[in-house]
Image 1 (cartoon, rainbow, N blue to C red):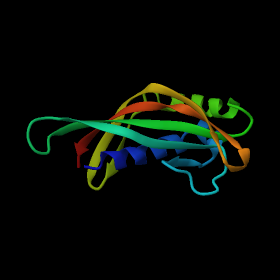
Image 2: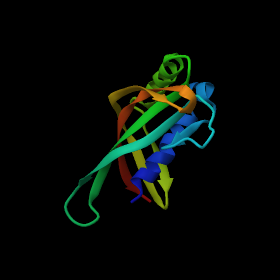
Image 3: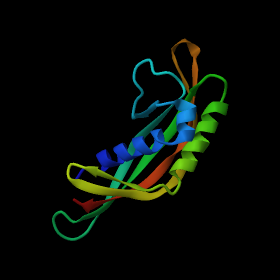
Image 4: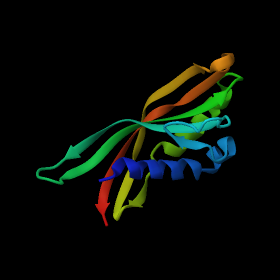
Length: 146
């Protein structure tokens, strides 16, 4: 099954399809790493880890519960811009749900809850500062069949 691939597709469409996030970062929503030279601000999402819940017997995976870090990156000027974008991310993600079809299987993604807040500063070459704010969100993904 391709739960993490389906979740990545759903997260990208959910985040990039939100008007508030689009107003803040345009189409700059990326999985795991931003492209070289990407303009700030942007949103990154990445898998921290995922747990499977299994039934009895082969092929009896009931659902997958991944934890994703979803954060805003804003350069310079303090935490203000990153805080604002992170607030929009939280409003979009908390309780979100939806479905994705991938490789002949449908997946339902939902029960989204933030488990941890995240706030940090990264030092780039040349002394430039990037402010990173967001959280780690627990999702649940169920393969619902074809």
